[in-house]
Length: 506
Image (cartoon, rainbow, N blue to C red; front, side, top):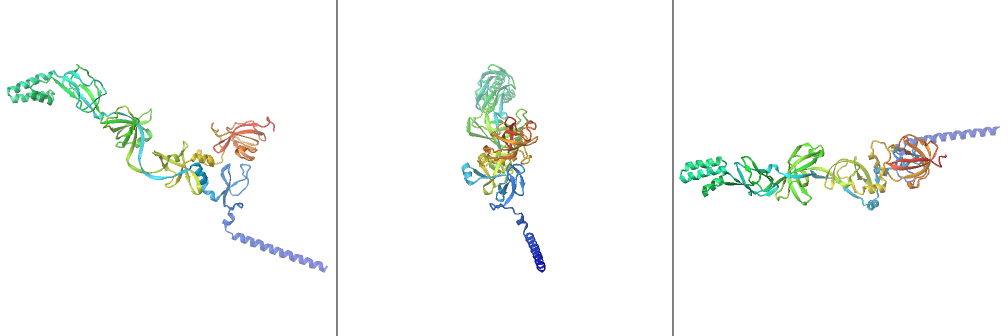
């Protein structure tokens, strides 16, 4: 009896000591845990590689981030970690130096240069109407001989155009000669003034005075070197004072009527310097200035006409020539430029690939301005000194699967991972086939548990496939075994057809 009491007391003592030690261990462990920094507790490290993990995500739905590993709620697959040393490539890709060399990747630096505001237009040449001269008759007479035979005939300054017979000049000349022979200088001087009043030229009066013979004819000459544009008379025709004998257009300068797009009309103004050339003589450049901007916009071409004045001292330019004209300002402006080939234009926006650290490349949307030779102006999206990919962008897209990065530029309002309900374009990629079971049916998609698809290196998993329309595949029910075909469409997968497997048997 005594021995049992002793044993019982010893057991109780041991239990008490154990409880005291357990309480001490729990307290000390809690205290040590509380003393650890929060960064050590929340630090996420991949035990296999030792690399720090930023978050986990489903590669098929990259827009969603998770704080811990596990199974994807979207697919029948495990979440994939994104490491801290890959943060620079979030939304981009990494291309190794070896692959860059194999793809022939070239880089260029966004640079700032002083450039003149210039653009190219086309136009046609015309006669300079401000340099046209009109040859008119000041007397009544008859055309005794016409030297210029037809319109558009070239003529030099001083060459004869027509010789007129003026019968009204004969009597005044005879009177002048008679008074001169009589020695009455006063009356002879009055007769001279009378001939001037009758529009007798001074050179004709001087010839009458010198030769003592009546001059019955007067020869009209061209005042400028150019082209006879109008010739409304013929030999023997009667002319009267003020009647046009010929119109001569000078060729020392020509007009060029240029068609400027309505969008660029505000950039053109009078006084701008121009440089023109035509296909017949591409190496020859003609300089000039913008004379004036004509008011009005053509409703058919949506262009504004500018009248340019070109120097044509060599006389090679003639009306009707189609010329390419480059307009530019005298004062240069500072602009940020990149090679034109570095800009990927999608139609709605422009994108460049910016080189980052650790061989990363990031797609950046930019706003572009005008082209200056082989360079394009960047208005926003880039900074001076940034490196951009100048060649091989599409090889990068093919080799490094950029199509998972660039689709966000296709529709920035659509969240990543959201199923698209738009039909696939006719030229969407190859057609893939699979076998699976229908897990869920919704207006936008079918959730299928499918078997492996070797063409895409997919394992067996459960995932969503978009429907081309809400009413598509209306006979397909949950639980059916189906055969299906699909195509890739902007980062998602669009069903082409779905049919029951095995002739409709489950």
